[in-house]
Length: 313
Ligand SMILES: [Zn+2]
Ligand SMILES: [Zn+2]
Ligand SMILES: [Zn+2]
Image (cartoon, rainbow, N blue to C red; front, side, top):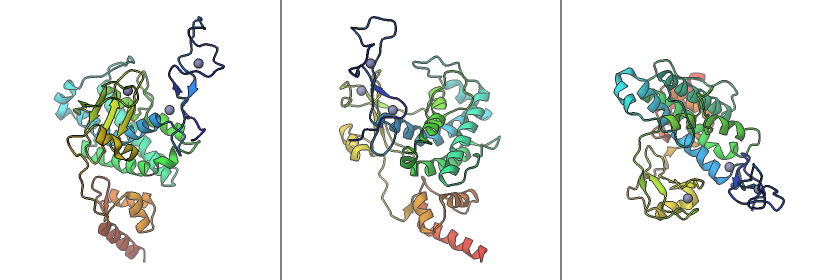
């Protein structure tokens, strides 16, 4: 048991501390408390489970979203833009305009590159997208940054000085046109067109048949999100030892990918050749290395490292 609470101030709905003076029905004033008991943090981090999972989901989606924004910003694909519906749920959001697509994709890229630099120990501003960046190029740039951040997400989310800023930059949804766009801002305004289905099992939190299943793609795990208002439970097929994948019996085994240990994560690749993750990322930028689904082929990594050593000698 931890006695740490979610740093974002999450509270349990309708649960109150004994000292709460604004609880219904005793309190009849204008500002009743809707719940004041703090939500405990997930083990090892400063966020509650829900905030952590949401942050992770937005990071995992970032590359697809930026690619999506770039593809609908492309005038040759203007027809697609007409079909994109703005999905405003609880909050009133002004309809975005075309210039927002450019701003949003650039802001998200800048923010994520900045965090990737930071994780790699280089505190400098993040690069944005070149003006005419095509969707797949933009996707690749963002995925590269996201891989670095996700590798260190546990550590970042346990760092008092950083976790707030990371959440702020990634998962906050602004009500008006944002000064700086977050992944969540873009996801609300230009939702990715996926085909979720209703789960055949109840939500573990609210017990209602209200969980949507979104099949995994691009190496991402499948996701389960409750749509009950005020519940917002979510998990992916890897959480809790893969429990939810069996509960919600995913008909499409999305992550069947023969595990070959020679496909390395960015962090493992860097460790193998005793370089920083930033250096290995640099090799990708220089087209010396081509990761697949965020994995690096061991022999390629070794070859580039050898080549670089040769150059330096
Ligand atoms: Zn209360
Ligand atoms: Zn929270
Ligand atoms: Zn629920």
